[in-house]
Image (tube, rainbow, N blue to C red; front, side):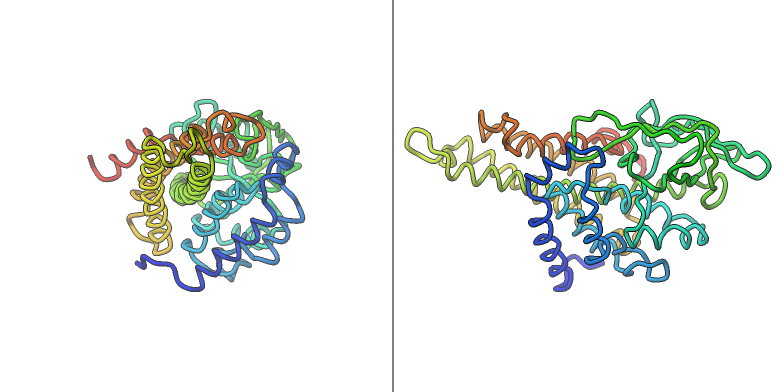
Length: 371
């Protein structure tokens, strides 16, 4: 396993960084978060076709570039820094990973080329009213009638559900938890946008009423695919959180250098110095955890389940703490709608809860290492 990024990977980071500086400035983030779809179709086309970021880690045989999860981690970190608004996480971290980790080559060949090329958007519908992200949270049922699978029930917190062309759904059958594909426009499918604290990441309620669906992989083996997807999504989210945490740390330090009180920059006061120093330590530790997760996933290491929960727990707390302290260091202006601090705080809080909070992941980590 490699523990440094190559020159090519550094160039990828620089390219994505420059692109997002141009396409995802604060003003554009604010504009998109107020729109129903939550993303810019032209920017999505550039990301998928010109930069090839959607299909970055998709094998070439399925229309992608064939790179690994280390490159993917870099992209997620940069998108977290820029607070990128778009269905990248739902399509790539969730749907693409779920398909890739299934044993259904026919489904991969059917769906992945369109996803990798940016022609279609996708997401995963997993959580329900319980809000749980484990097997016990999947209670929706699927039934087979004359060879046709039918879904009935409700899914919540579905990322980018209102714009997804393809929804991969977790449901129970007589054999256990399985995964099903439902395309937009299917009969009995209703999608409703949810009102969320973090407006930069759209969520939806999805209702299924006798909705026809296509089985993905083997009936009853769905949780095998979903658990792998959740681990990779946790690593991707950890990388996103590191990008956001670094951004708010930079905001706080820059403000501490320029804001003057009692004739001195507030950064010269011991209390502010200690806050910034503590944040730096936490952000660098979070970066190490997220990067190790990305490298482990890139190497297809057996450690992935362990480091995924470790990274998700630590990076969630580090990002939320950094976002909170950034507001404190800015003082009154940090509480205003006009300042970007609250946008990052809301993303930090929503990301902390997504796929399970730090308490959940610490318990999962303890189980995985046999404690």
